[in-house]
Structure formats: C-alpha cells, structure tokens
Length: 309
Image (cartoon, rainbow, N blue to C red; front, side, top):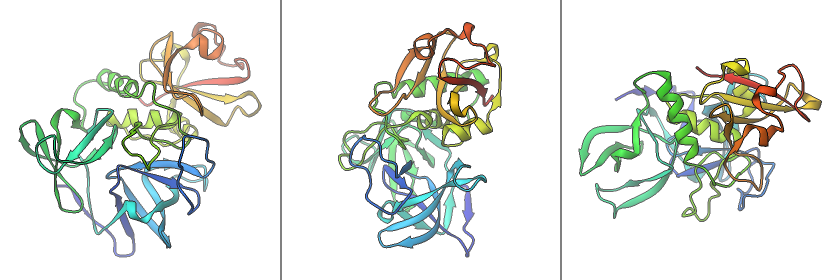
C-alpha cells in the first residue's frame, strides 16, 4: 500500500461524496444546469484536498489533483470552498492505483449487486486490492471500511502498451458522456440518481476526465490545459489530441477545448444549454481542417492545436 504521512502543520481531507462542488464563495451549491458564476469545478469521490480554512459548514481548500494557474498567476491546486460534509479529514494519504472506466458504476458493501453504497463517476480514482469475488474487486477506503466494485468497471492507472492505447481510451471515455448536458464548472458524468447534486461536465472537464481514465493528469481548465500542452501544427494532429480556441478580440485567452477524433470530427461539450456531442470540424468552425490558416482567425476566433503525447 502506498502511504504518505501528512505533515503536522498541514490539514488534509478526502472527498467522500460521489461528487462535490468547489465554489468561489461559501454559499449555496447549484440546483440546476443554468450558468452559475460561483461554480468553479467538481471533485470526485476519493480526491485529495489541502484544507486552508474553515467557516461554518464550509472549508476553504486547494484541490491538489486539479492544477490551475489563473487565480494567483502561479501553479496550484484549484482553490475554492467546499461543503464540510463532503470531506473526511485524514492524517495519511493512501494513493490510488485504479480508475473507473465506465460512465457510472457503484461502490457496494458486499460482492453482490444488491448492496449499493453510492454511485461513482467516470474518472474516479480508487485503491483496489488484490481480492476478487464473483466479479467484484475489494476496495480499500480511506475511512477503513470494506467496499467492493465491479472488476470490469476499473483498470490500473498504469496503462500498459503504446500511446495508441491511451489515445483510444481518451476517445472511448469521452464518448461515454455523449448527450450528457453541459454544466459550467462541471466535471462528472451525468447521474440523475443523485437528486440533490447537479452532475454533468463542461468542455475542459470532459477533457480532464477522459485523460484521467488514460492515466494522464492534466490541468482542469482549458487555458491551463493549453499552457501545459505541447503546441503542434494541424498536420501533426492525432486521435486524442486537443483543439483549442480563443476569441478574435483576445487571441491569447483560451476559452474552449475539444478532443480531436480525426480530420473530419471532434468531440466536445459546447456550451450552457448544449450537450456533449461529436461534430464535424467544418460544421463547428465553418471551414475544413485543410482550409485552416494557422496564422489567421477563423471567423471570430483563433484555433490552436496541442498534444500531451
């Protein structure tokens, strides 16, 4: 088991809800898919947070698994406020070894389908044990309870094989969220059974989750994803690479990201009111990829290409 002692001067926690909202202020969480400017991102079950402060029912935290740059103009975990009841305080960090590869699955209290504890989203990381019973794998939880998960719904974070396998996993994972609604600041599969929690994803959340399933941790927001990625020319694009766009008025500020499938198509979470979709490049941008002049605006935006491979 991979164990890390927490430094006495630091306070750490782990998310124990299926999904938890990170907010820019300690105020009510979203109740609909409508745009909410206070919504920053979402954390999944098992994600680690560094706790900075407490205020009533809220914790001011740093979401260390989601790199961000814009708030303080330096690289840090995403800062914000989270409800205290979503967090378990910890004094040891048990690093995960597996990731959920299905759109949704469940934690179970026993190795059978009638003992559901809670639903889990695509991209959730867990610590899986070696024991398997009747198609269920034992899970080591941070609160020292025994849980189980369907063995086929997870795989190791250490992806064996070539980059081609990772690229396929990125597309397969993003495609599982097709027709899910767009949610600003969302970073989860849509799970209607969580009636009091809004679950869905935005454009960069979709990318972040798909890459997590491929064992690749990249920043949370599209601007930061672009900053960390290697810039490439359009003729170097391969499946799973990224297409970024910025407005013509502010071409340095990336505002959207989509995943390249092939020369004709991409997958994206478009905007509030939209749904995760596969769309033709020409339908999205008004011209084909071949027609793109990488030094000029395409309509009212600039388009950039980048890779993490």
